[in-house]
Length: 542
Image (cartoon, rainbow, N blue to C red):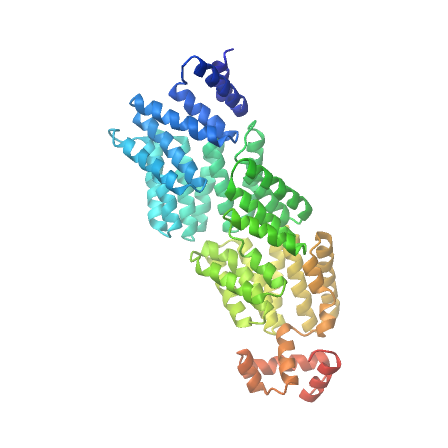
């Protein structure tokens, strides 16, 4: 079989590496005879090159396909080539080049009478611009228009693309149930209608990321499994294997397989770098940084966050949490506040707010922590996602505990623990159990406190969560059961502060200070300010 015939057969059989190699051989042979590949073969050559990670050949072959179609008077096909050249250029961060190609595609369609499917494709970049600009209603309507064009021309690829864009717009509008339904429909279409792999891979990766962004974690896990099976069934496929591995690493982390998750994230980085996918490589580095931070490997984590940032991945909120763990609370707070100021839509804010609560609790600013936890709860209510509600319940419990209200704290923490159990999220469940244990210490229930704290320690030890183990080691004894807020009140009492002065210093009401002081007396077994002061000096609490 001649190389060109072999290339066409391999392409039809989705043997992308064989197709790429055969087309390369065929073109070399034709060049020696002063011949060129036909426009359709150049298109196939470009697509095979993209799917096997040969970006330079992709751009070169598709540019020549665009010229061949244009010279033949097929302006619609030329415009489709220009669309993909623009789309891929923008995806690589070459915005000016990409905009130029998209502008050329629009000009080519001026020569096409009536409607055509390419007009629908050219709506999609504008949908993304509107989504990034906060124009969610306009983005949705434009995506609907693209869907109608896809239906008119029975184009499965555009249909899946446009449905997926509608779903993203609905998620940004906090209409989560509608958005997820549209994303599911897009996924069913790419899975069942033999969409072209370039489109299938893009939709798979985007949908999984969108599901994670609204904490539809069960869906994200399901689609990640499907993506991995799809990648495994595509011989020689390069572009989507790396992002699939990133998603899998995140799921492994959630399920408590930290060592396996770290290795998967490292393999993902190598795969993404080989495919020249900077965005996915940044995500792989961020996943590594998070795992390194949790395991107490601060210097390695900081390097990974920095490398992720170099590839365009915002290192927050992980880097802020690392700064807080190392005692640099001022930098951590500034970073989280900056990130929140830049994100006004609830989907992106929900990702940052838990870190905001944690950092503020770390410096004893309970009021600011409470505000962040309340916003998180409002978003969780709007999204109606169980995972986000679980996170909100955890941090509401942490805030209530810091305020000296262990009864309210327990009510929230029990809800959070059940949610983590359902998600099989071992680390998050352990953090909640730690807070449950501390609440029980505050209530004088030593037996339950011991059970909960021992369970948390056991999980931290198994996972290698070094920072958490250090924080928890002997914590109730060192503070004699006092919460951070109660300890603050005690220290101000030892400095001679009156209830009124302490209330002003901490931004609390005098009644709240009285309640904290009563808890202090009960836990320390004293009955007066003088006795509490003496106890504090004797046990190093002053």
